[in-house]
Length: 359
Ligand SMILES: C=CC1=C(C)c2cc3[nH]c(cc4nc(cc5[nH]c(cc1n2)c(C)c5CCC(=O)O)C(CCC(=O)O)=C4C)c(C)c3C=C
Ligand SMILES: [Fe+2]
Ligand SMILES: [Fe+2]
Picture 1 (cartoon, rainbow, N blue to C red):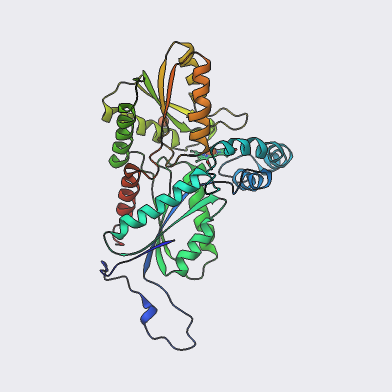
Picture 2 (cartoon, rainbow, N blue to C red):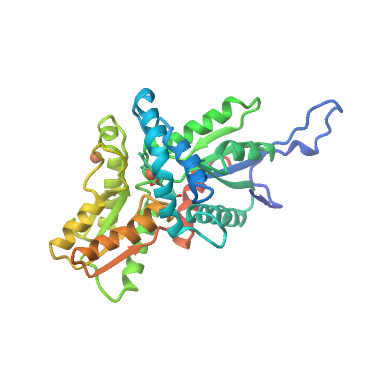
């Protein structure tokens, strides 16, 4: 957790009661701070079987992620998936693992985003604590909310790091926050960050990241795919707005870049299980493009706030291989916004907006 203590305190209504003299038998009171908690999806603690299994078990037991009835899903999960997937996914994680820190890139980048946000907010004064958590794995949402509360935060802004809303991501973060509140006697006031898929700062950052990346290449891609993580088609039919949010982000980028529909396309990646997922699929599209004679493409992942397994291994690695195997010549992956200045501009703008009235 990074604390920001500034000499200038902007809002009158925020008080620190630590200095108030309390009766001797009074429990300690610490209040008056504001917390910001960045939350990303999660990540295993290691790439070997047991850490992978623990992580996948928590993730795939979430009823927001797999909506099948427990009586059907649990025997499959415990009987097949948790026997085979930890090994397969562990190998994939090994390819992208941050060996220096012995952790996944998602964890490294999320921590850095939290540190940089604290630095940026500190510049303007205020009494804020900035921290980060993972929905699955460590550090857990519960542990960081408790730490913020213990630090005197009686107002906490929770930021699920997903620009496009989905029940499988945003809602499950909010569920976990509410579960932690259930056990608190003195609950902090909570705000959660809404989706920001059409925020001009976000769209501008994405467009600039494309322009800058393409300017540094020695070839010009014929088209760029915006590849979003998929969800089952049935979730969309039941009312999850995720598909529409993805389409809107890409449309706004296209308008900002002044490109036509064929030059910036939407695809969906990371299918899991036998169901039909949102289409067109990224891997199939990449293959079809190469077979149709397209020689140069770029792929980016606007829905991922940080590079991770799904972008580094599945897109920068596998999708590139597919393209080359089927006749493509030049493939480039445009990195996520991560903790770059552009990425931090987006996070800071969203946080400042959502904190309004509190600071
Ligand atoms: C099984 C169903 C899954 C749904 C639905 C799903 C939605 C979803 N996921 C992300 C973002 C990420 N997913 C990541 C990894 C990952 N995702 C699933 C499954 C579903 N995701 C699994 C099983 C895994 C683990 C890896 C594997 O075994 O393949 C990650 C990467 C985490 C990392 O440490 O790098 C991210 C990020 C979104 C945005 C989303 C729906 C919109
Ligand atoms: Fe996922
Ligand atoms: Fe739609």
